[in-house]
Length: 185
Image 1 (cartoon, rainbow, N blue to C red):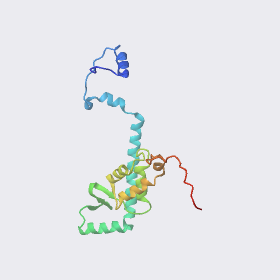
Image 2: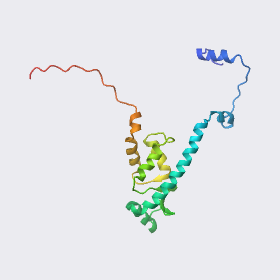
Image 3: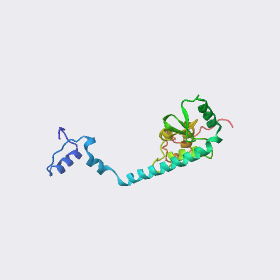
C-alpha cells in the first residue's frame, strides 16, 4: 500500500492478503472479458430477452391498432392530407401507417391505445416504474403523438405504485402548540 496510514479496514485486508503470493496487473475494462462475464447475472439476462420478445410483440400489436384507428383520428387525417399534398416533410405514410422523424410511429387517438402504450413503458417489470422523464424518453424513441409529454406526465403522476413508493419531501410537522386563550367570547 502506498498510503502512509491505513484505516482499520485496509489493515485487515492487508493482513489477510499478505498470506497469498500474487501480482496485481492493470487490465483495461474493454479487454477484461472474464470479469465482465462473471459479473453478469443470468436471471437479469433472461429478463432482457423476455423484455425484447414482449416489446416486439407490443410493437406489432400497436402497429396493427394504429393502422385500424388512423382513419378515425381527425388530427392524423389532417397530417395524412398534408403529406399527400407534399406540405409535411416531417411526416410520411409507410405501409398504411403515419411515420415521423426518427422512424417513429404516429399513434392515433382511440380505445386507450396511448395509455396502454405508456403503461407498457412504465409499469412492466423491465421498465421498473421510472419517472416522467425516463418514461417519456422510452416512449419517444419509437412513437409520436401530439401532447405526448403531457400524457406521459399525467399517467406517471397518477400511477398508484409510484405514489405509494414516492418519498415524502415535506418538512415534518412540528410539535403542537397550545392556542392562546381568548380574552372575550
